[in-house]
Amino acid sequence: MMNAGKVYLVGAGPGAPDLLTLRAAELLKRADIVFHDALVHPDTIALAVNAERVAVGKRCGRHSTAQRFINKRLVDAVRKHEVVVRLKGGDPMLFGRAQEEIAALQTAGIEYEVVPGVTAALAASAELGVSLTQRGRARSVTFVTPRVAEGEKANDWARTVAASDTAVIYMGAGQAEMIATALLAQGMHPQTPVRVVENASLPERQHYSLNLRDLPSVTRLVIAGPALIMLGEVYGECAQEAARAASEARCA
Image 1 (cartoon, helix red, strand yellow):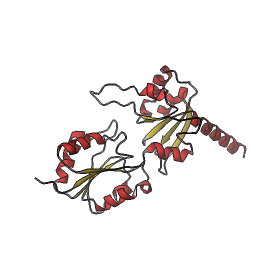
Image 2 (image 1 turned 180 degrees about the vertical axis):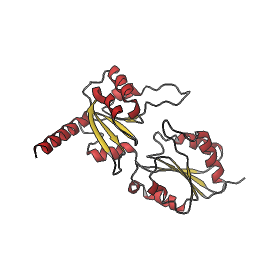
Image 3 (image 1 turned 30 degrees about the vertical axis):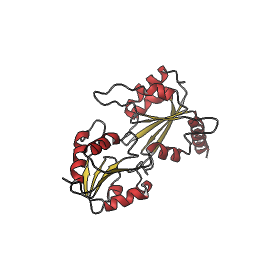
Image 4 (image 1 turned 60 degrees about the vertical axis):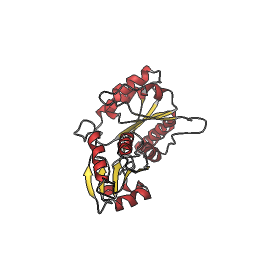
């Protein structure tokens, strides 16, 4: 059977609908069917005014759609629809399992295109007003996740973080104690500044300032949305400014 159309792997950005790229917004308006992640904002999905909308999201600790099933749905859909959108949170090419979907499409001989999106680390940095790189201070940046799927070999994320000037840990807030233990074992200083950012780019965002030694305390916070753990000396001044602001507020 001839394929009728094309699959677009589209980045929905960090959350806020107005951070969607122009190309992504146009594709959603043209889409015949949209397979979307769980964390994509409802107002972003609503742009697909003429499309069938199918939730295929993955959330840690919750019922999720198997990746092989998503792959099959994409292959089947493009044989019936001209514009098939796979809408992923953040950027498709960063912790989005895009390569598995690309491989399935290539095997089936299906045309595809990847449309980049703003990843959460960039949105969080913008909100904090702290650059991930800084001249003379931070020349390397690492994005990692400690999560490993069943059957996969362990990755050396902790060594990578310890060797980087600035690091952003995705999908790690629920493993804060393990993360702190692993990084301290790699020789990172207990006073390494840390920022935890929840729901980056959204009105309900929350920022928490602490250090590596106290990172396990994050598990006592009520964090319901997606959260990043951001580490590095670049966040030291950020924490000092927050402390000064709090002191000034008490004295006012």
